[in-house]
Length: 148
Image 1: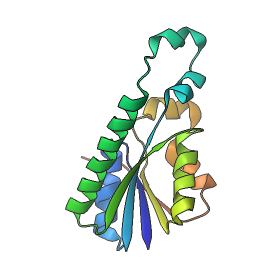
Image 2: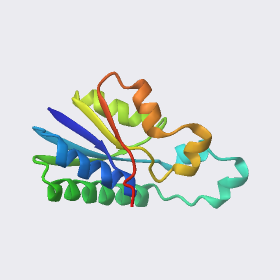
Image 3: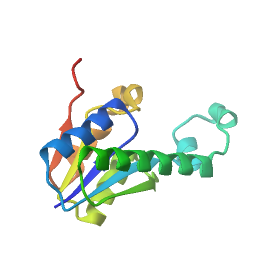
Image 4: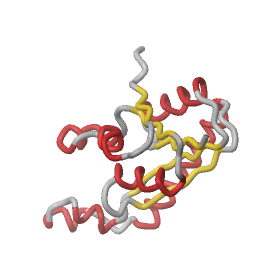
């Protein structure tokens, strides 16, 4: 069984990794962080915002790589075996990118937190986990936030 874990560095995505490690046995785990290239960011913002967004393409990619590596390290520390990571550019939407990577890997299961770092945007557009749930044609586990 291959597990794909969507990781954005949020507390919910960290909880998703911990839950997966505690409750699932996998042959391999892939931690995926999706990043937005500048052109995708520009297409989602008004022209007025154009001057406010510096070109951070390589920097965004490097940060996503670091974040994916962090998620993979957390997964290993939590007990998951054969863990790899990927930072993938979002050319359409974050949820679609997650679904596409799951299809590419033929993942047995997609694991996400219920809310990520894009929480405010998700109120307007719908959450990433909700879109993945309704568009992925494979099992999915959405881990709710940990109650303190």
